[in-house]
Amino acid sequence: MPGPTNQIGGHARPAASGARASDRSDRSDRSGGSGGFDGLDRSAGSPGDALSLERAAAYAIASTKGVGPSAFERICGINASRGRDFARLARLSTDRTAREYRLSPSQAAAIREALRAGGAASGLRDIAARLAALERAGARLSLKHAKGYPAELRDALGPRAPSYLFARGDTSLIGHPCVAVVGTRRPSRWGVEGARAASRAVVAAGQAVVSGYAEGVDKAAHAAALEAEGRTILVLSYGISHYRPTKELEEAERQGRAVVLSQFPPEQVFSTGTAMARNLVVAALAGRVVAIESGRRGGTMETARMALGLLRPLFALRKPSLPATPTGNRFLLSHGAHPLFAAFEKSALRFDGSLLFCPILPPPISGQLHLFPSR
Image (cartoon, rainbow, N blue to C red):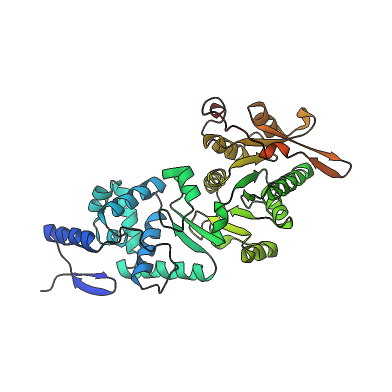
């Protein structure tokens, strides 16, 4: 009686067992493996071709719940060193995946489920088809360690860098010097005008603005950068399928003046956790960080803490009267942030951004960091 078959790449073949299956798998890994990265930065082809299936497998693993950037980094390293591909994990048992890739049983089981949903071959084809549809809509996938992934982000965060990114627009903008302009979702008029003035100063210096895409300071910063004919980088706190650009941003994408990034599955909704993860990317991409308006707690304070942890110079807007300055800004200023003065004169905001691009030593590793404990 014939033995059971495994559907690999759409072709039935007899299932092997025991040591013989292991030997054949290892020989295949050594002789024909791609090392996990060859060509993964290319545009998606047919959802059924080998490259698209391999990209789909890598993305399925990277986006598996419970498999964070460090675990994915380890899987990438082992595959690269042994000439293995990502799709191989669909053919391994949970126990063997956990043993070979030093994963927990729950991580290995989750990866197997993600890769084999609907069957190993059909599951990967479905994932590849979804990735191809996203690319046709303008959202391209970049996997960590593949050529299309921003080196600046990988270098700044190392194992903490997101396992993958979806991007719209010209990703070469990420290689340009940029300044993060961040602040509250509910700014005062002083905060809105301060964000706009800071963005204009960044553009005038030939640099790009980077921020989230929340209401308030984030959107004011991006809008001002584009109005000044500058460049801007949007980092989303949700999946790219939920992104709704303005007409100005759509035009800027076409002109190569805006890029949109998301480190989450396309359908991911906003949460406090995704916002914190987004803040780390904003801080990592920026050469300097400007806190426009903030309370004592919240995303702006977290971004400031992350910036200091990455040794990024930190600035905060201040009013001529320190007591009138927002509470979060006062806290940052009293613990080492560099002041940028902003005050209304009649109906116009007078903004002094001269210090923003002066030579400034990065913050010391000790001293400021203990003021921003991790939660």
